[in-house]
Image (cartoon, rainbow, N blue to C red; front, side):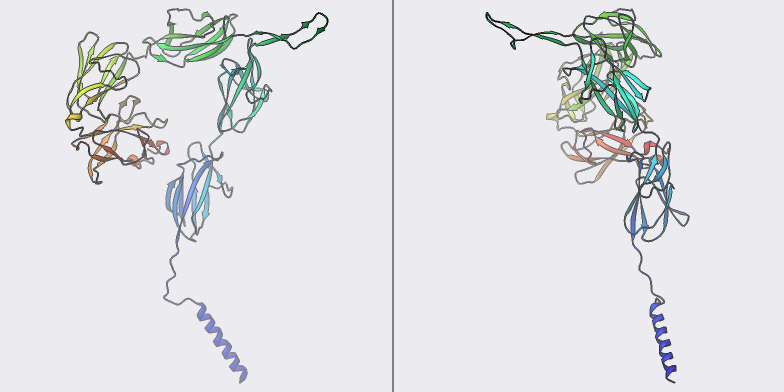
Length: 554
């Protein structure tokens, strides 16, 4: 009977152990925590790039999406998959931490984690720049430069020359002498010419140093009555070749500057010494004879030089002080018209609008009368007179004081219209009239290749889609009191209290019009990035915006 009791006790203990190991029925496991997963992106050179579409999935179902750098919230310990997509010329290459070439990876985290996707965006373009100086460190130009890979010529140019390279590849660069100027060394002391280089993504600059003809001859002798001896007395003879320059620029038939027209410099034998695009500057030697030629392009045909000479090419003897020639082109598409914009401010520089301005032609006839701000179409080259009148506007009853910029108190002010848009600001004295009671805001686009230069259909920078940005005005207590939409033409909040402080907010446009990009406030005209910004009644504000994701996605 004793063995049976022992077996019974063993069985009883086994059951008790099993029971304590099992969870109690009806108990609830504690909820797990969450962690942040960030997916960032770089190109193969290690530079940060953004805006690449990323998908987070679990069990085949999409949990969340975003654009790099994308942040997702994951339940700790659970398994997910993340997919990094390429776009345009940038294809997914690998994950930075594992080297895996698969764009989809499994993730399970218990703390905040960051993974970086590497994208192959093609070759990394860079350049090498070569300029030139004489032994005294004076800048000289027009010296021939050759860039090679092995024995193959990749590019050529004349100093100052910028030649294209590919980062990481090996080249050689050679600077040739000309005339009395021989290559001496590179500015870092290297005397090898050509010299090797490995192109970097940030570009490389070399300066070639030339010996332009200075020579020194030294002789010495001394004789006494009883002894002939050598002494250290010296005499020197120096011969210096004087270098100079010729500059070439271009204008259209209205005298407006135009650029990018091909020009070439020849020696007296007709050999091309240098070429470039206006405005261009070439190195010359004073006293020598040269020829300079200008070519037409597109709708613009060369007609003459600004001094009336019609020969092309034209010859000249280089003076020691240098010389400049201006080629005149007849451009069928050139416009003879421009614009004059007139604004008004009070004595503190704050915007004050609604003051009468009259524009007269050169015969004294009024051609336009309007209130500030106003834009008037002018004819390039013609003279105009501008008269600002004292009166009542947003700043109260104010008296014209002077024109900002030149301090002129002339009424009328005389000016000649140019091809570039012109701007005038009249300053009014509103000290005795209670001060201004308005705030004007303007919206501008930061120049970039991904969007038009203007929000408005037309502005001084060009054209645009006719869009506006939203602004909000708050009083000093933070209460919203007014809203409005502005572009380059401005929007004015009126009916304010003179001297009071207000806050203006430049609002962002997130996922603008259902797109995948945002139009974001960047800074005010004074580089201040505070938003909202505190201003007093009478202020004028310029808000500048940028666009994310290359303004893509509709």
